[in-house]
Length: 274
Image (tube, rainbow, N blue to C red):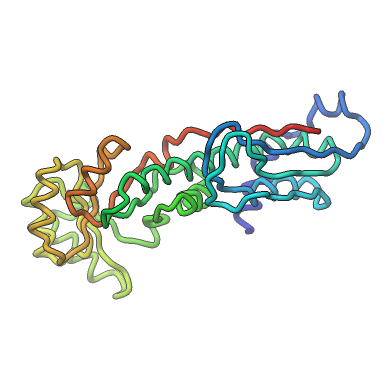
């Protein structure tokens, strides 16, 4: 919550700075007001509590009432929440609250579409570190809300040996050996591969998770057969809603989708004063 409050305070400072000139001019006196947050398209809800916290940072006396739980799919026209308090405070918090809510709902909605696209397969949809700087915590929460799974949060909580690590270490086997010697037994080692020969090398070196990076469907099927359950298999690269089902049907365990957080469309949500 401390991290979240810092994020909200920074966003409010960025927007309000020395004061809301328009609101000071148009609404100079305190007056009570009520408003509704309305979905202007079908979406999956994520982040209502965070929107409410934005208003609470401006005035703890503001009453924010969410009308849906996060993860709920709602229809266009649904009232997502109501908020009541001083009109000026509601107006000052409106944009920041909506910016965060719209982005989080966009991530949750997109994630839910990917999850639905692979239903009936064993593949799980996971996110990446391709997040908006400063917003990773809430963006990864939105992925979970949409039914996805979080990959590692940052560089500090998981080992993922990528192409440049392999080059710097002098090869796959050496990179895995060094990582194994360094980390505690509770951590797994994942490594990125681009060819079937690299898959064989990663297996021989004892990788726990093998990422198939930008491989064709035929290559993925061959890799899954070669690995034969000895490591988890992750597919990455070229994943979109048109391709994800076919990728899942190759038998991979995990499909990582950078688009969940680096290019979701913000959902259309408005706040209207009554």
